Amino acid sequence: MARLSTHVLDTMHGRPAAGVTIELYALDGDARRLVKTVTTNGDGRTDAPLLARETYKPGQYELVFHIGAYFRSLGITLPSPGFLDTVPLRFGMAEADGHYHVPLLASPWSYSTYRGS
Image 1: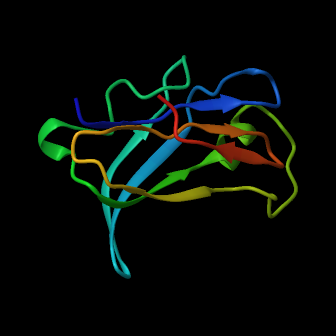
Image 2: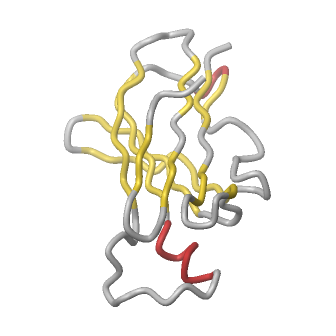
């Protein structure tokens, strides 16, 4: 089944990151259209795929993870401005029937991502 999913792991504390706001944008050249805004659950995942079935289309997308707000909500003292406030990830989905899983592993000072399964 074609779909786009994500999850966020807090590498500072070694656990899923609950309560992270994520925005999904569809990109068309220089145009950027907000598709949806979601918040991660207790497992650091979204309750439903970001795109699935009729909403899934190959193309260019951007996920924006509001990681600075997440760490501040935990009482972590961050400099102002923080080193990482939002983490934008731009990626392409070429497979019409693909499952694209784009996780974020983050601390207040670093992040990494990959195409998961």
